[in-house]
Length: 140
Image 1 (cartoon, rainbow, N blue to C red):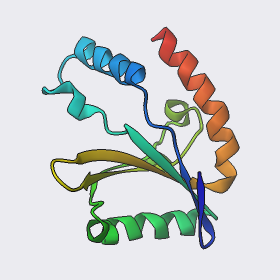
Image 2: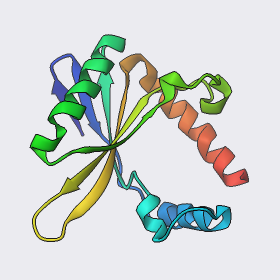
Image 3: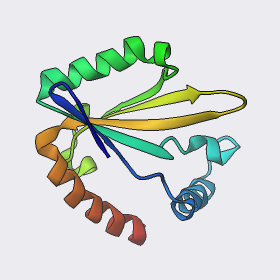
């Protein structure tokens, strides 16, 4: 599902599967060092991407989320800037800005979601790199 946002495009991603979340929990348990409940460390059960028209738009989008997110019940709880990573091998050359938001809805609804902000020219590369990521993850 895609929505146009001026020059940017919002692309809804798939919900993380129970199988994948179980794999992440097993990995967290094996690593140690994370405080329980381990499920609280899964910060991307729901995801979306914002495809931007270059670095200035990426910055504008991130700034808007930081400043206006709380008004829409989406306060930012974490930012991971892969553009700032000095080691391209760490990200296999892929760069984006990950913004985790905490939605609190009616009743006891509370969920963290991840918004990946990237240059629209990176989208095809992202899909290719995800295949490599899955292979690496399977061998880890």
